[in-house]
Image (cartoon, rainbow, N blue to C red; front, side, top):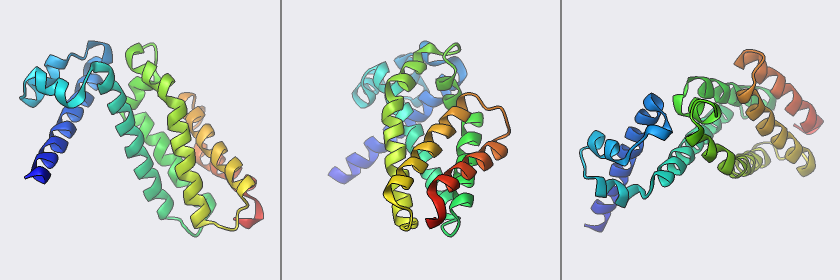
Length: 194
């Protein structure tokens, strides 16, 4: 019975976050109301508060969920090219840039003039997101390409993550070209041991 309750709560939380995502994409975070979430999912407002907490907690949960989804997608792209570092990085970066261009929540988070309410989650959580992304990428590269020395690996991972974030904010080329250029930088940093 306990497991059933946990499953129901998990599903309810996902439905609430899905509804919040849609509402934020449509109206912006500043206009999001907990009562709207309740109506969208068909539960009481108190249930929304019990499951998600405050509006700030909703913003944080949406941000974290998008980071986790992005990391999963990146890992899947890297897995497709375990034998080629340059191709793996290019595929992962292109995925990230394309996701940021198509995902209305990510767009809202990255355009402070449009939705300053969500921007605060990016600015207060972005360093944690960078640390998470760099840690996951470092572990992946260490396992997949063990010939890259730790210092080069750390620099390559940091460059990939920070350059990708920079291209999300201010791309001056297509996602494919940005991905190719970032992959080339990473491959050069990683050196001959890749």
